[in-house]
View: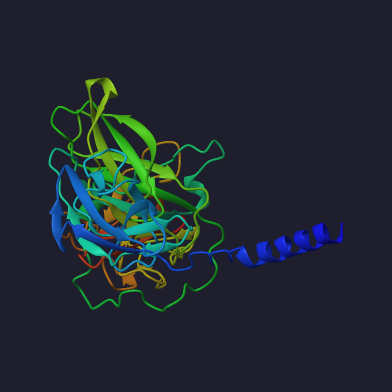
Length: 392
């Protein structure tokens, strides 16, 4: 019996010696390198993205490819994945669900090994370029007084879908002085609550019977289709505007459009994209609400607003936020001025309405502050409240 116990003890001891130590977990990330396309390539249609991914200890389980804005530190938008060698992702740059057209981007590859470790490639700069898609002429952000949005939530804008008399994209920066971009001047006082809206403008596409309107929080996306809109065959410009209930001053908003044919069954890739920031409230200035202008020649003045480069003034023969469409009696649209006042008599400008003395009656006036991007394209509009004045 003792002999058997000794044998068992020896066997147990030997088994302890023979047990191998577990292999330490893989803690080293894999490597990833985009081998195609080359830096600064222009991509059209479906483009193959080729990735060389390696791991010294385990195998690669997946490679993801993302597109993002040039210089961005964010991961970006997932454009495809591959799980087998050779790792190739086919990227349809002309897809309606894809990124906007003519957009400078950088793509990165993310390799994941069996241990869950992630390795990221260096970025590769590319640009998308596809034909047969709409051209977005303007994406603008609007800051309105509360009167622009009645309780029903419907737009109360009396010149088509905008208070301005023509396309926003025709607005030009001031030429009568040097205006500092992103001025640090603050409004004179708090101007109460404001409502915010986003507006798209684009040229008609031959043969299109409708358009898809898209919005995003980042230039690259992801984009959400918020509306299918029928083509306006009587207009040289397609326009859509909506309120943005969750916006705040300083927030950015981005947009793009697609065209639809075959009753909406066929959709093109996205247009170019554009974006803007919501401006602070514009003050109402003087003459103040209820003022009497004896000679019918109101001298206008207002306060500088942060981020605004140029100003437009409008005098209407009725409430611009009312239920009927008023006539514009005086404006410098589509021009803007860097001055903080306009003194009657105001001469006619190229494309503007001459400001003649106002006849007896009641009128409303307001100021619109305008911001411009680095290409001098208007992209932000902030409206003052409308002030009522009268001429005896």
